[in-house]
Length: 217
Ligand code: B16
Ligand code: MG
Image 1 (cartoon, rainbow, N blue to C red):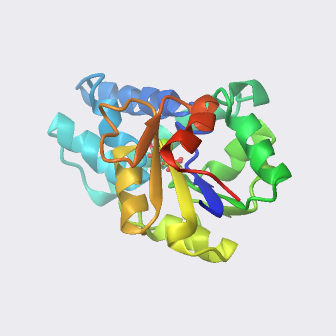
Image 2: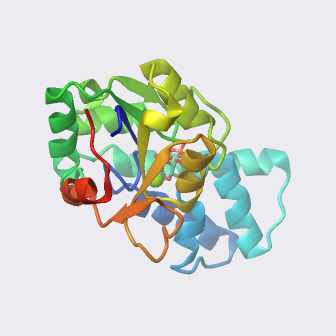
């Protein structure tokens, strides 16, 4: 029985991963190489500069620190353009229902995202008020798989780590949850998220968690 829920943002509450990847792809194209579909998984949940280094590594491209910052800013500008068009309809199936259900039952919730764009996304989706605590890339600089973002969420909620359940779509995020001493629910493909304690295809299937002994009170 868990006492609090911590949600990753990209890929769990909203499908922004496609916009992140489209922006990285465009950047790679500009540098003369192409990212493969499978590369997307490597970038999920990873902070912006770490993701940039992964992309440059894939292309075998070396740049100065100054150029790296410029490329990250350029990627972010394209990404921000895309997420500025998000509407409440872009929430993933079951996400709004689960947040509302937890709120109505008095279960505390936190956002634990590596993204510095989280506030903008939450506002576009209109769900800022449904989260009791918001920990994003501007609050915690260590990127997943470092557990800092989830630890900060639990601390702000005043709930012990072992009483927190983390919902994550990224391999790095599942690892971060475990390193924080929390239960990790993988959201997505069970073959990718094998390390998670339980995997569900999406938050619409959160009702099935009870079958695996995960309930909130
Ligand atoms: P930004 P999450 C992560 O968010 C994304 O999954 C990851 O792909 C991205 O690079 C990272 O945020 C940083 O995002 O560039 O917007 O600061 O999954 O932890 O919610
Ligand atoms: Mg994610």
